[in-house]
Image (cartoon, rainbow, N blue to C red):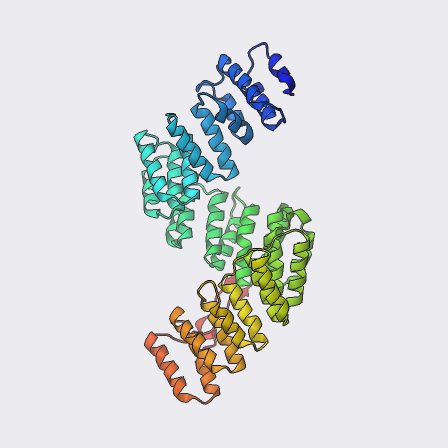
Length: 515
């Protein structure tokens, strides 16, 4: 449909329906028409004459709700926009992930005296929850109470989700208990909220009580376990989900959520089984699944398989996460030159590095003994890529200097840090001092660590081992007395083992206890 010269409008002799006008608006929004406002006013006049702008005629707003340019064009130039048009644009903003714009739109709606309805509030509440604006969420809750909309199932579910995402689980649960019709989204929002704060018992109770679990319910639980480091529980629940005689089976999002559990527990065999399941279901061609598989194989130590999968990812789908997986994995396995080579390939592909990239890169340079190259990368991190160094980056640079025996320069860099040095930085210096026998700097680093993490026994052990090697037994006694004073105990070793299809912790008697 062309808008040139207004011919399309001139041909509209008879009353028409919302579909035609929605099409006209879409064409106008995307056209290079020299005077779109005049054309819009012509369309607006037709809409007014035909009654299509009335609040009781929803088809136009419905057709524009997923069309942001057209909805914006009509709303911002309409003399008297309706609540339906506002709701259409709120929906468009929500799809685009624009919570601030949605809140501004909601405020404009109120300023025009248009009453928000049960369609409006879920969008506004989602915006508040996305921004973690709890006080605003409470204000919106009051609005719904005044208008009697809090009893609406979707508004109620949105309120539960808002409180849960903003961390107010008491009010979220209270709203949940007061809701007569509990939608699956209400259950899922509360479960996800409990999982975020580590209230696993409460989340599990809700999960068990759910009358009907959907894919989001299962995935929320699995993802929550993974993010909290409970890899065994995540894998067990994924296995249960697959074995149940139910229509709800893991989808690609579930697969992406559970794969980190294999990486964290180094359960390569289970990771391979999940990969086989993804391939059987056709999920392994999804770019996000491919990237997650690269990460899993990398962290489990199968770099050959990780690289094979990485190379199969289409060029346009290789995001910074995929590149970071390979760079950090090469670095953590001591393959510094490969990490550097992969970083250079990443730059040539047009991907901009982020803080995680530089952590892996600097670590790789350190392992490979590429001291000057690593320092040059650290400098480019700030001057070329404008990535602000964090504590972990400084720790890598301290390690770079230390491997070259340049401990004084490492200390000077710590003193010049823009942020206060954390445990990782002082820990790197303390380890380097032990390797090079520099007791003076070791005492400085250790004293800082005793302040930052007084219960970490490894820091005390490093210092007293240095004193022991030098025969300074009085100092050894002093460090051990300091440990007793702070109530610090030396930690036993611990590891995960994989047995058949289960991941389990070793028995206490199987753990080597050092003293």
